[in-house]
Image 1 (cartoon, rainbow, N blue to C red):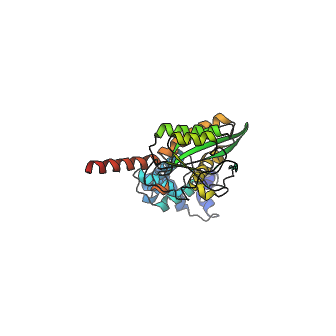
Image 2 (cartoon, rainbow, N blue to C red):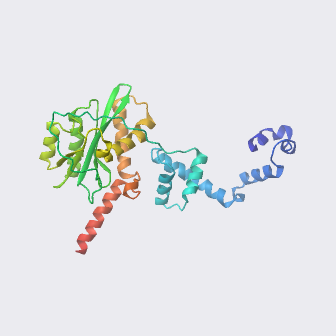
Image 3 (tube, rainbow, N blue to C red):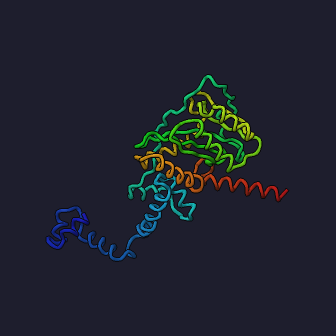
Length: 299
């Protein structure tokens, strides 16, 4: 109504218009006065004016995937003393919504002719330290040039992605490349378990031999049961929801590879994860090593 009055006030006048609208002239003039002088605004309106651009910034800086809770938590991490309900109200006013995950398509193709390691994880994905349990899985992306496949290796302690690879084919070589990256970056010691589903890529001779050479103990879940590799499935689901479904359609391999590189860096160093205390994976690992160093010095 304010905009309508502003548009026609010169031709008709404010009072004649207000006679036909559910608004008093004094209300219109009060609105105009506050617009001209923001100091006249109520304290809540002044606070909202400060918070709106900050909420938009946090939303934009985090792939536009955060919902109310994550935006609120990030703002609290940055020092803003703001209530969750305020963030919810302003995000609604701004038309900002977090991403909603969809269902994951099945990519596991079991090879029953190959020997299969035992399940040493038994759906227990919580471990007390880094490099005790890695989980691996891959997913697919439809592009204009055909399907592209993305493999991840995740450290279960802080959900950190320690290896990844994008490929035009879903062969054993590309999941092996993701494993090689993880081994090279982390240089794990003894006692590490690697868990996957029963996909033929992970049961291949080259893959199992590489695990043996690195001193990594293999573990494999059951066929067709997502709970047996739930942590890896979760990371795949986040990747599809936060990148692939949100930013497509995809032209081809190069676009997916570049987007994955950016997302992995953001995920590891800036994304807030609820299971590890609403901090990024890299921060959770840094906290662990800092605490360990403090204990060592105290001893």
